[in-house]
Image 1: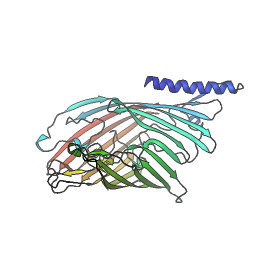
Image 2: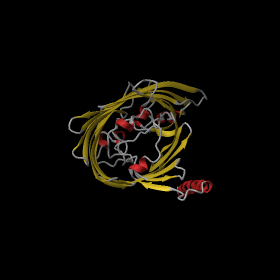
Image 3: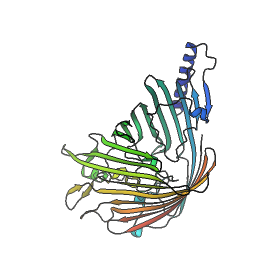
Image 4: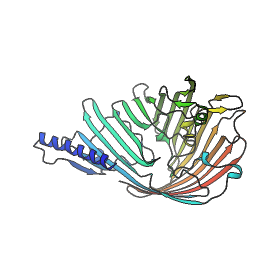
Length: 417
């Protein structure tokens, strides 16, 4: 990581130094601006630039802005230090997000209070904008430390005019209509996912609407079948599309997804099963500085896109008694209300649910339905510094009827620079 950052800095300043030699009339090699309106506007992107910021992302005017001598290139260095405190009444493995899938049910649901501290939500990022004929080239690299081995890429993509290539928010994710939560993952039934993709976005196809099309990579998950010698892989990218409408009262978004689940058999044959998904979401301005948030997502063979089901191998379910597999229908959704008590303090309340279709022959301990309640409050202490407090209660009900619940309290301190 150290050598990577050093290389970026050396390359940039070498470039600016060469440009200064070519234009000796320039006395200052670079111009540095920190967190001001002038910095945010110092190199205007064209109107085709896609900006998809989540509610707790680092603001566009934060960071260190470095401008090249000719004014055609800008480097933005941004980061955030985030300190999380977690209090659990059950010893759940995931500390950044309360996953209802993790909750034990029946007699195994035993109380075990525990406490955790973590800094892996902290972030570091770089953005480069370069003016070229016909528009701007924009490159974004943002990381955090919440990966399996600590380091994780959040965003790594380039954009020119209508096209994006690289990893960023999936078109199946409606990040601009997602409500603020202290927990990393958002509501249990939400779609919060970044994927490697090729995307095309236009505002000219339908008047008043933003339309996007994408080819995305997100490997199907059916870990249960690994024991049978069936391995999952992706034979073609997921095809996604999204329509967005912005009005005076809020935003409405609808996305569609088509996927082809591919499995390799021990015989060398390839099994293909088509899947699909739909997401609809909105946020609506309400009375007295309030706002409503709603999202619903469902599909067949697309369980991996839902927050608490991601990584659990539920895209395909094996029925041992029937000696066959099926693609379960899964559904997730949430409704939340957010209220600003003042310009610096706001709170929200969120109800979320999840459902996984069961059939005759499905094991009794398989997840059937669940949900969560979340209450969050945030205090904007000063420019760039915030404190968040969150209470969560999660519920899981298995196919056989056993259930379990867990509670958590989170406190998050962070400063965006």
